[in-house]
Image (cartoon, rainbow, N blue to C red; front, side, top):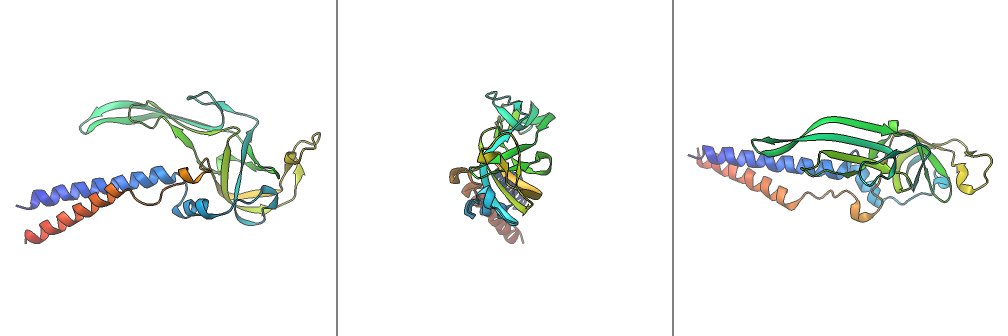
Length: 222
């Protein structure tokens, strides 16, 4: 008698759990929950004052080689285009990934005190994304040249060197720090776009109610 109730509650519970997974995947991108908390709480260190250890840096992206984005045609130092096909399924239309294009170029992140070199092939880039809706056949992930980004990274100090010897501006001096491991580079520089670690209320309620219904059904079925 209660079999269909248990099955329905179980299916709803799985759907609620998947909703939570998708929520955190969309919010966090390549960063961990710990990094999301550090992004919100750590103070920004001027690049020239960074010492060995974990730091949070902020500055403008400066690239010598760029790619034009599909949307808005802006220059980007890192660009990924995912091409989709929209197909009808049992549960409605869904997007099927057909192919991906990724173009990455080395760049600097620069503030008023200096600059640090970033190799995007060894970095975890939290891209700004566009075209994520169901109807879109092209999803773009981009890091725009000239925009401000934040870096969370372990660094070590070497020594400053002149990037352009014929120029004398302070920001033409590379800061003498090296990013270690796989640094996080994110476009999220303001509190309103920081990852939200609190789960969506609807998903939590759905999972809790489904679990309760399944438990009640199993008890009554005994």
